[in-house]
Image (cartoon, rainbow, N blue to C red; front, side, top):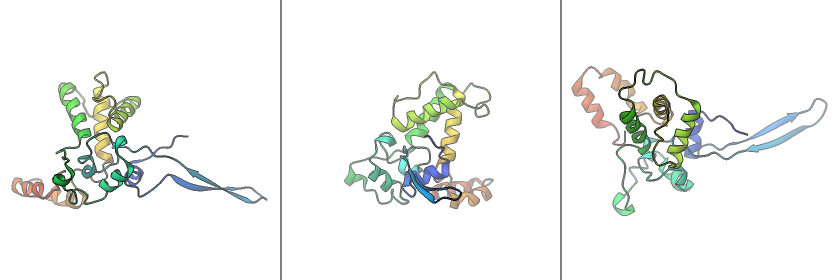
Length: 193
């Protein structure tokens, strides 16, 4: 059985705040109630992850141990990270956003109606699997540019915290016509955003 996981649930499942389990009550008229436990396994996805976690991942999300994933999905995980001790590095931009934007830059700059035409669901699922598993390493070139564009929009929509953090959204809107205030706000954003 497959179930649809929306962006809100994906964020909670990725961070370990929720699990796929429930109890169904089967009520028979004139009979006793039966309780059926239902549970499932969630395939972790970059869709619904945080930017903070994604910049810390060096490989595909499905190769990251669950305990590590739960740790880096916690708010403030970047501030607790000691790169010199861990021997790691951080990406300036999540590699998933880079792959999608790079594909659009290479293949879509001359396309009309980019971001206005819908993509194909089967191709969007293939792109999602590619980003989550790292296989193939690059997004296949035969895919529709509109599917890649829609995947980027969906990816950004599913982020647990948007590129412009919730707490800065109103400030950004009020200062959008002032270059100096806009630059100050950008300097106050977390580096990974």
